[in-house]
Length: 141
Image 1: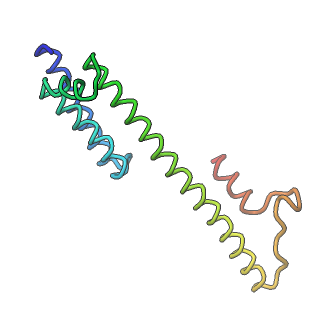
Image 2 (image 1 turned 180 degrees about the horizontal axis):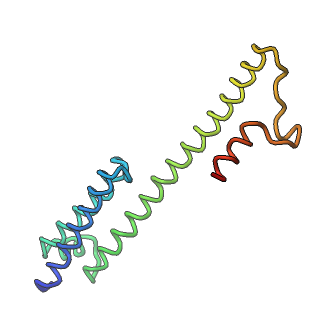
Image 3 (image 1 turned 30 degrees about the vertical axis):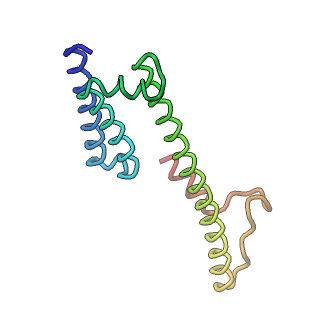
């Protein structure tokens, strides 16, 4: 690797790490996800500084063309990231379902204490509830 390409690789790695820090400071990226991206930037930075490491890793893994190791690493990283997001989405969907059920139970208790008949759901009446109307107003601005 010639020095110009090495300089570009180092600059790109540092810019990636700066972007991660910037997004954390702007509260647009949570720390748990930032660690993944920061680790990826750090690995790229190490490969950028240490020229022979890529060749050694390729030889150790049995890959003839050393830049293919970077492609393989990016594919594995993408797979792990997608798996992490899938687990997070599954957990959030379960929490959302549980919170919706708890809200319905609490609404039912409040209406019983106030002496009103519990509201029927949209599925039972075909009419949106007050909460649905409020949500529509919020969406429409």
